[in-house]
Image 1 (cartoon, rainbow, N blue to C red):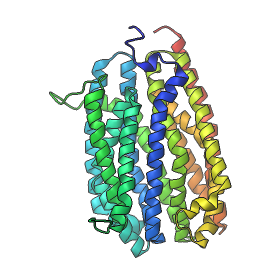
Image 2 (image 1 turned 90 degrees about the vertical axis):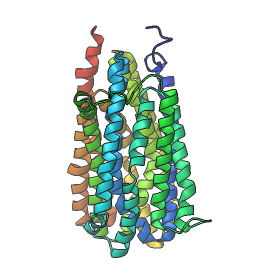
Image 3 (image 1 turned 45 degrees about the vertical axis):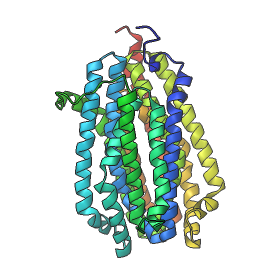
Image 4 (image 1 turned 60 degrees about the vertical axis):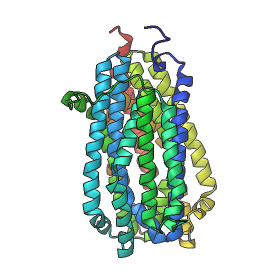
Length: 454
């Protein structure tokens, strides 16, 4: 096949390719990070209890995101690898089965959210007022979860074929709708009712649904590398197993952060609910640093998968190396900003004197993990793209469940809240040691054999 007819992931110079595929994703994810912060900005104006309620809802929301993104990563890796190997049939079936899995997942989470929202907050020892506001928020986000599941899946189909500019548009439109509608629905501006915390949830799902519809339109009109069809469609056990061979480790990997957040909420609320609010604010702020790296990750996975399928080792290695350098550079900038300006940043969220007292050292201590985390994200994307997602899962289990939570609990026994935050950099250092070891093993066993002729 000539270079003119081959997908750009196999022929474009690597640095330009990584930037062209990642920059749109990085921009769109920065916009998403902005609406996460705007969400909390307006919620904080209701009360600190409202901010805490949204923070306590995060583990469940993150679980939905984990399942949607994990399934999407599995489809992304299989579809890109199939295109690289010129297997059009598998590429088409991957898209069809991926959409089915997204729809089924949304129904499951809708049922769970509607039935168990209130007990979820009571389990976290929330006060009655925090539980009431949190349950109202979660019933809307979970009850209309089809928006996030279909948005992620349709966007992953676009990413799999290198059309990341289109995903930048869909995510950007969804984020802008969320940002605009947040104050409108929270405070009841114009003809809209005042919904409080529930308004923040309604704005979120509205943005997700519009983004999903737009992503579907882009797939139908612009994504000509795949031709999925409903005619004669039947679920394929073979395709679903291949999707989840990468997707399940990714789901578990991302779900682990829900367990970690749930555990940290329990540890922190034993000090004060303000500590939980600070933890929630940190997660919103860190998204400004991590989201560009996740955008880089999303652009890198199909590049590595495609060139692995095409047995182009030099391009694969160059992409991973360049991605790691970019990720660490982004994290260094984020570290500098948070170390220098923690108090003004917290002031965005109506921080009280008590919140500043807790939050300033918290942000400075936790952000020490940023540089290590950037390298770990790129290692994780490499494992996923090469079909070794289980390694990412193992590292995440060690980092968040074996090191971070036990360390935070043990440090909490000192009665000094500032020491609890040290668990984050401790865990990230442990993870980077494992990532280096696994990366060397993966290159030796999976990448180096590509030198041999197929």
